[in-house]
Image (cartoon, rainbow, N blue to C red):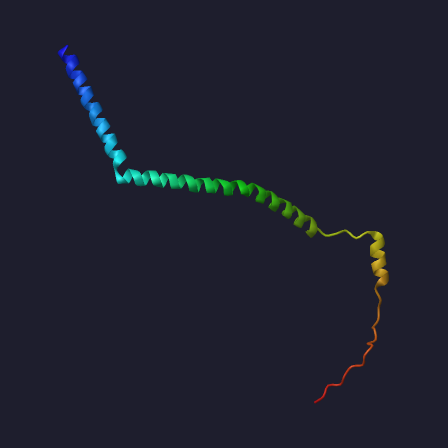
Length: 106
């Protein structure tokens, strides 16, 4: 029974020492600063998450725009009738100027 009392006394002393240590840590300025920093980090992380969620919509817009650019940059095929019409419009020879050229003055 004496050993049980010694063991209880040892456990009580360890428990008291642990409680004292927790109270000192909780009351220190370093702990307060750490808790404040963690709270600020949480707020910043929330902001980052909101911005990242918006990136999905931007990526979708970029994908659509890239597709449009690809379609616009592809060369258009000319049909046979339009190519005949364009060659018929071409003329050979020189055209006359409607206004006479001015002579340079020296």
